[in-house]
Image 1 (cartoon, rainbow, N blue to C red):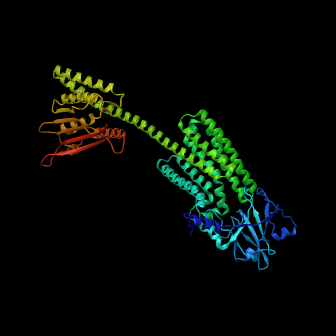
Image 2 (cartoon, helix red, strand yellow):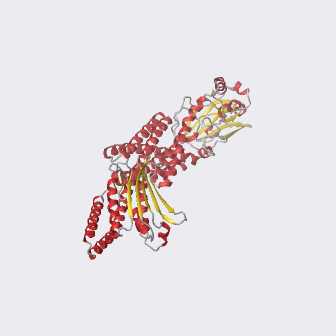
Image 3 (tube, one colour):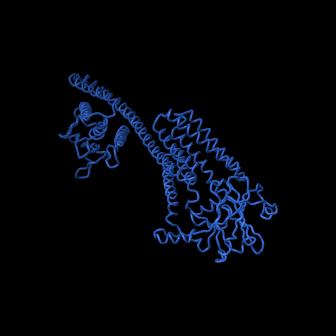
Amino acid sequence: MLLLFSHSNAFAQSLTIDRATKEIPFVYVKVNEQHLELEDLLKHGVTFQSGNPKLNDLQAVYWFKLDFSNELDTLTSQKEWILHPTYFSKAFLYLNENGSVTKRPIGKFNKLDAKTSMIYTPGVKFTKQNLIDQRYLYLEAHLTFPIPNEPRFEYISNSNNRFFTHYYTKEDLNLILPDQIYLGACGIIFLTFLIIYFNILKPEFLFYAFYVVFSAFYLVQDNITLPGYNHFYDHPLGYWSIVISQVLINLFYVLFAIFYLDTKKNYPLLHRAMQGIVVFLILLIATDFWAYISENYVTHYTILNLQRIVMTLFGFFSMVYLLIKFKDRLALFVVTGSFFYMAGALAYLFTINKYHMIIGSMIEIIIFSLGLAYKIKQEHEGSLVLQQEVMSKEICALRAQMNPHFIFNALSSIQHLILNNDKKSALTYLSKFGKLARNVLESSREATVSLTEEIDLLRSYLELESLRFDKAFQYSIEIDGTLDTDSVEIPLMLLQPFAENAIIHGLVGKKKGDKSLFIRILTQGEYHVFEIEDNGVGRFPAKSKKKDTRRKSRGMEITQKRLKMLDKTEENKNTVEIVDKYDTTGNPSGTKVIIRIHNP
C-alpha cells in the first residue's frame, strides 16, 4: 500500500533526510561485443575510464565499475542496502555470492522486484559481502534508446528505501498530478467519442477516440495507474506498444482528418497525400516491429526519427495548404489544433520535457472536441434543412393527393347544379372554388403562412364543402380578440386536414340531429391553441366502416411531423391531442382535436 504524507512540513523535512542517498563513484568502458561476461571482459584487459559517458550508442554495451572503497564503514552499519542505478531497459548487476561472481538481472525488462511507486524504482538489494574484491560492483547495460541524462549510481539503506517506494511527498504529487489529470481527461474524452461513434457511426469519431487514447499511453507511459499495467509496460513487447504509440497517434490523426474534412470531396490533392501517409505509417509500424524484436535498436530508433521528420514536414505543409484552400471552419479547427500539438511536440523533442507536449496535446484535444461538436451542429442543421425539404415535398404530395379528389367532387357538384338549372348556385360554387384554388396555388411555395391567410383558405374550403353537401352541416370560426392574426406564422394547411376529417368521417355519417363544426383559435400563455371540434359520430364508428382512411391518417401524420420539426426546446413542444367525446349515456358524440404551437 502506498501511503501519502505531504501535509506536514516537519514530516516533509524528515522524509527528505530519510531519503538521503549517497552517490557512488564509477568508471566505465564501452565495448561493441554484445555477449561478453564479466570474466571475459576483465581477461581482455579493457581499460575503464572516468567521466560521464554519453549513452547514445545503441550497438554498444556499457560496463560500469562502481567503487565502494570509501563507503566500507557505512556499509558495515547495516546488513542490507539498496542500489539505485540509472534505469536501463536491459541491465545486469555482477556481485559476489559465496565466493563466486553472480549475474543478477536488474533492467526494466528483466528486473525481479515489482515497481510499487509511480516515480521511483524499487532498486536492487546488496550487502557488503556482495562486493567483488571487497570494494566493487559491476553493471552491464544495453540500450534500446539513447539516454539523455548522465549515468548516476546511488545507494540507501533497505529500511530507508521504503520512503521512496511507499510514500509520496508534495513534490512527488506535483510530478504525478499533471499526468493523472491528463490521463483522466483523455479517458473521459475517449469514452465520450466512442459512445458518439456507436450512436451515429461516423468514422471520424472512432478514429479520434483512438487518437486520444494512444496520446495518453504515449505521454503518460509509466505513470498509468491501471491494474496489471506495470507488468505490461515492463515487458519488451508491452514497452514497444507504448513507444510505437507515437506512430499510432499520427496514423489515427490522419484517418480522423480524412473523414472530418471529407478530403476526398473537398481537398482531392490533400486526400491523395493523406492516403500515402496512411500507407507509409502502416508499413513503418510493421518494419519497426521487425527491427525491435530482432533487437536491431539502431534501425528501430532511426525509423522513429524518420517518422518524426516526415510527419512534421507533412503537418506543416498540410496546415499551409488548408489555410490557402480552406472551404469552411472545419479546416480552421484542424489547422489551429495541429499548430498547438506540433508546437508541443517540437518543444518536447528539444527540451525532453514531456509536459510541453501534454499541454500542446490538451489544447489540441479541446480544439478538436469543439471542432467535432461544431461538425455535429453543422450536420444537424443540414439534416433539419433536408427534413424541411422532404417535409415540403410531403406537403406537396398531400396537397396533390387531396386536390384531385377534391377537384373531382367540386366539378361533380358544379355539374349537378348546372344540370338542375341552378345557375346562381353553380356560379357561387364556381367562384368560391376558383378562390380556393388560387389561394392554394399562391401559397404553394411557402412552408408557413400568416394566420390570416390560413383562416381565409380554411373558410373557402369549408364554404365549398358546405355547398357540396347542400349545407348539411354548420361551421363557425372563433378567434381570440387579442390575437393579431397578421403577425402569427403557422405551417401552411395546418388545420385543413383535421377539418376535412371532421366533415368526411364525423359529420357526413351522422344520421340524426344537427351537424356542427367548431373551430377556435386561442392564446394560452406562450402557446397558440387551435381546436377543431365536431358533434359527429366519433372516431370509432367511423373506423368500423369500410372506408379508405389512408388519406386521413397520412395527413395527420405529416402534420405531426411538421409540428415536431418546429419544436424549439424539449420543455416547449408543439403537440396534437385528439379527444373522443361521449354523451351522458356513453355513446360517441364527436371528436375534438387540440393543436398547441409554442410561440413566445
